[in-house]
Amino acid sequence: MKHFIDTQDFSREELAELIGLILLLKEADRDRALPELLRRRSLGMIFEEPSTRTRVSFEVAMAKLGGHALYLKPGEIHLGARESVADTARVLSRMCDVIEARTLRHETVLELAAAAEVPVINGLTDFNHPTQAVCDIFTMSEHLPPGRGLHGSTVVFVGDRTNVCSSTMFIATQFGMSFVHAAPAAYQAPEEWLEIARANAAASGGSVAVTEDVEDAIALADFVYTDLWWWVGQEGEIPERRAAFMPRYQVDEELIGRAPAHAKFMHCLPASRGVEVTDAVIDGPRSIVFDQAENRLHAEKGILTWLTYPTLTAPASPAVEADYAGRIHDYLGRVGWEVGAALAEEGR
Ligand code: CP
Image (cartoon, rainbow, N blue to C red; front, side):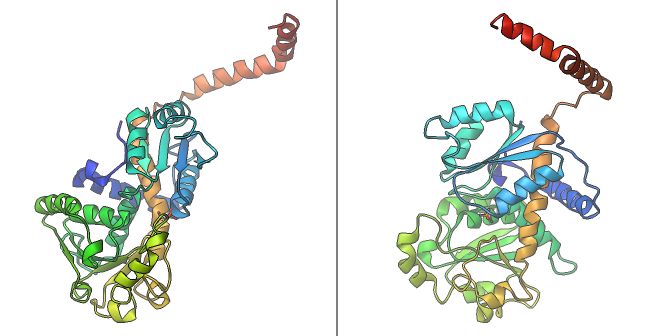
């Protein structure tokens, strides 16, 4: 049984296999021919932080695949307060076929995975966002210039070293892309991320770099990616962060105008319009942000199926189903109430 905690846990070949499945499921969905691969299966979705795309994409993906999803938010389950993370994982494993978790701390999702008896999917932590990364590499593969592949293409990530920055850096270098992080020195990717990305690049033929020189970096970009400059819990740092990034690292028309004409603009969303990106760019002709958002749905269908399908036991044969249905209906319809009344009379 595999968990989906980090794209680094998978080889490039495995990730390519997943991307192929996502494409097939997207096409089947478009043609209204999606098979119910996860019929009657349940997904438990733990969210310690708010979400639009991750929550909706997982829930809709399960419904489209014939299954069901439960939205479990803080205060509505006992996780970490009245029940340990491990016990929550054990209980959900007995009732659900797969668990998705967005947790404040990366350690929490690791703890869930260590105790769970079903696959656990990381829906974003303070370290990474692997389902977004899979969606993004798939989206980039759909928006390459004619005749080009991912290998040898360049993604320039502008702004803070967010969890999406780490995940994009890892998956891009796994696929042989050049990844450049353009940010003020204090907000650049740390050495431990760069070590991982360098190892990926050495194996794949890609490259990784960090720079403050956003103007020069963008001139080589096939994809320009940015993310929020601050997140929940960083509100106290807003003045210093704004001062560090604005105006040089805001993706506006002037900055993206330095990129080649074919370069696309990406953002995982939610965006702070007028902060890290202007309306003119996010709503402009280079923007693929809503294709990205839609692809979260197709990516979740692929991840859920790829991870869960091999571990599912085959459904009962129609004959066994019919036999059980007959016996249960018989019990309920013919003797059910009489048996119940007799047991109640006996005080059982
Ligand atoms: N990109 C992303 O994860 O969006 P949500 O926070 O809305 O899930």
